[in-house]
Image 1 (cartoon, rainbow, N blue to C red):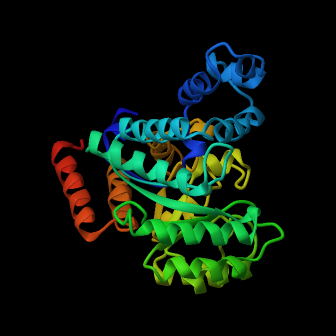
Image 2: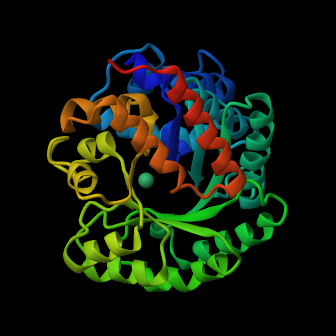
Image 3: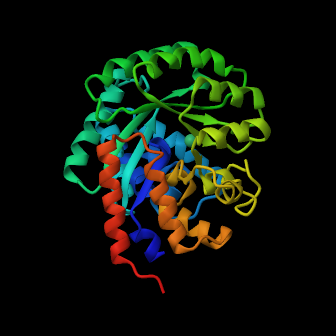
Length: 340
Ligand SMILES: [Zn+2]
């Protein structure tokens, strides 16, 4: 584990709300409700989180609900954003692309939500120079087209103020009953402003939708679990990177086991592929742990792990200058390790 922690790491698929550790949830609960408020102590699952007891899988998924509730004020949202960046930095993640869906809450407009996250990123990055952080604002497709329009307009507007942080957009959420082409039209507006696209793609069996996303021009593939046949060939030819989230997929049962995960096939087949956590707080993992699973399950060696992380530099939405700096970090790291 020590080695995996020491390797400089790049995280490209991490949702803010799902990346709140138990400790962060506990601290946010205390800020919002006070330490001994019944709202937190009477809730059995939240009580288990605050007292460090183990959770069932069903209880783990409740963390999304708590995160949503606890980040509805500017103060707690800023606290949460800071904590997530600190946690990634503590795991020696040197470059992070964070995602979040702007929300209107009882205390914030969507714009306030997004600027709170952006301002916190700017501030924390100055305090922790070892990590570079970007934001990919999301569209939750289950929320409908009007929300999507609002999010894209807001992102296009804020892009001018935060061009160094907003680098792309994400499309996530349950796709059922929606059509990608409707969202594609809306996302085009962001794409034509130079923003990159990191869409959740191929999470379910839907060859036509995957084809549409490729035609639209997604720059990365979120999960890509069910990409096959012609679509898989297109992904290979174009070198579209897959963001593989091992533990997330196993715990959500979109793959049956680590062993059966499509990462192995992609890695062996020479596809562009990287390892991500998706929601490390909910799934109780770290990027280091995901890399150690790659060694244990798929037989990657330590050089492969460094190579995997180095390859990931090319899949980021960072500037050429930032990519150069990341390469220097890896070159320096490689000079310090000796393999037996
Ligand atoms: Zn995701």
